[in-house]
Length: 303
Image 1 (cartoon, rainbow, N blue to C red):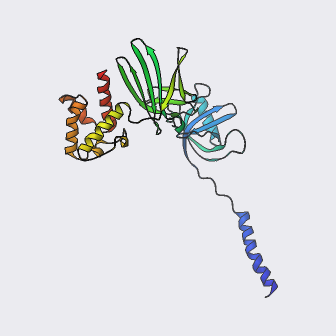
Image 2: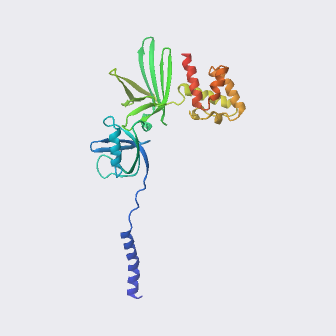
Image 3: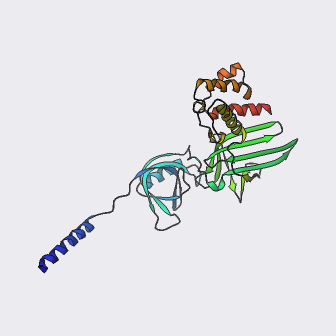
């Protein structure tokens, strides 16, 4: 073999590889839309995405626009403000953050809304606080389901009340209960299997002790789900009560007119509805949650 041809054949692919390596550049990170909450303090810009407990340091060309808008909307030090932007995440090279959010462009900010609380498995469960009152005992139970659903049940002599909502950590990492219609929020402090809620203006706090796992079939929802499951099974459409959810449609449990009519007849006694209420209230119910609210009214009226 001609040694000159052999060397040329060996060097040619090496030269091509070398030129390609020098000319190629790493692909730019894909930008996407981000929704979360931003807090800007001296020397610290943090971003917590909705549905996450991860804290990013905010950087990149869009950060200046976010900072200007944040300063305009800020009403209290350390406030978290909901923010939308485009960008990409990357590893941090220094500082207290594990990751950076490189913001390419600012989109929107709104100080009147927040991300839904993010549930964490370690805090789900049932918590109860009890206190002696005149004539008996006042009890308040928090049911924090793993999927983020929550119900607060309060009982006392002559009183039964339930409130639905959601629970989880906010951007500060604080456990909160958020009422379903966002009318109010309660904050708690987690402490070794307990939750503590400060009582503003009373220099006091309520202590809730964890009593076990969260049971979905508690309170009005549990009674509703068990009743609906029994009626569906009797109509030839067996279903387990614990498989039902507030958003489950009645049509999916009772798929024909005969089954729905049998349920309607049962509702008159089970929910204490008269003929007018059957027409005005029951006929408008379409989900398990709608029926739960009727059941809740029935339970409260009995107290």
